Each structure stands twice: as C-alpha cells, then as structure tokens.
Image 1: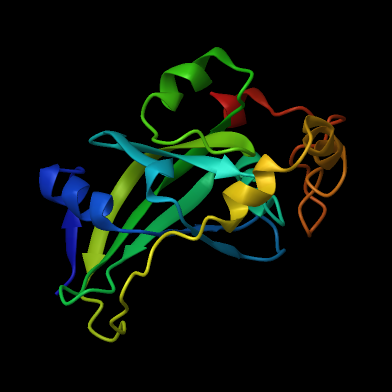
Image 2 (image 1 turned 90 degrees about the vertical axis):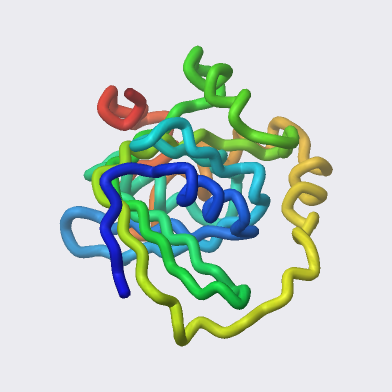
Amino acid sequence: MAKVFSHIDESLREFIGKQAMFFVATAPSDGGRVNLSPKGYRDTFAVLDEHTVAYLDLFGSGVETIAHLRDNGRITIMFCSFTRNSRILRLFGTGRVVRPDEAEFESLRQHFGNDHPGVRMAIVITVDRIADSCGYSVPYYDLVGERPVLDAHHARQPAEKYAGRISGDNGHSIDGLPALDPEHPLPPVARQ
C-alpha cells in the first residue's frame, strides 16, 4: 500500500496541484510542543524541482514553524486527498526561511499565484524522503471553495501592525524559541 519515491515526478506534481490544502509539521529539538498547521490557498504552494518545494507563509496566530526551522530545520508536509481516490503524501525534509526583503524572495515569488496580503516569509524545503500511504480511512469531503477570510483580514491591516507583530506575538514560539525576534536575527542556516 505505501510507496517511497526517489523524487517528485509528474504524477506527484499533479496530485499536489489538485489538493486544496496541506499540513505542515515541525518540532523543537529539545522538548517543547510539536506543531501541526493546516494551510490553505492552493496557489501558495509550489514544486520547484524534483527535490525542492516552497510555500508562502502568511501571518497567522503563531510562529512555531519559523521558530522550529531556526532551531533544527526539520519539517514534514502532508497532502491528504478527500476525494474518491484516497491517498496521503508526505514530504520529509529540511526547511529554511526566506524573508520578503531578501533577493531570493523575488525569484521564489514567481512560483506562486495571487498576491496575498500578509506574506511573512517563504519556506523552502529540500525534500529527502517522499512517501505515500493509502488514506483509506480518510472521509470524503466536497470542497465548497477557498475561504477568503485571511486575505480579507490582512488587506485591512496597516503595515505598522505587521511591524509590531514581529517584535510582539511573532517574536517567539509558544515555547520561547526565537522566531521573528529582532534581537535574534535569523541565523544564516535558516536563511540559506
């Protein structure tokens, strides 16, 4: 039932492209909480090559993924089909963050769709294991549409609010690890 793939081929790209959401999992190196986040807006995820994927990270209620990537880089992305064709696909790898003010961000930006307000970072992942599983127990769901609430919320926010969040609630993870804290800039390994 389960299969391990050597690279992201065209059939895997097609499966990924059809999914309306994905899940991101990270954990700190030493204790702390495991983070698992659902992500929507299918145009915020891109396959860059056979072993590299990226997604746009939008401001939200927490900053665990960035803090955990700063800590150890470990990340897993999961896609789950809710249609008649059951399948779960996991991409295991090492992630890094690319800030909007870095030159690389502009080259990454071309891989994504709409201009979403509230972009915090791009997360780039070097994938070292690709595996699927059956998903036979995952229920069927019908997609009604993408929820526009986050984009609408971000569009109403002044730029100063985002600057305040960097030193405020996005400064550290819930376990106290540095994330966007201006006193602890991103280490080179988390950026490159």
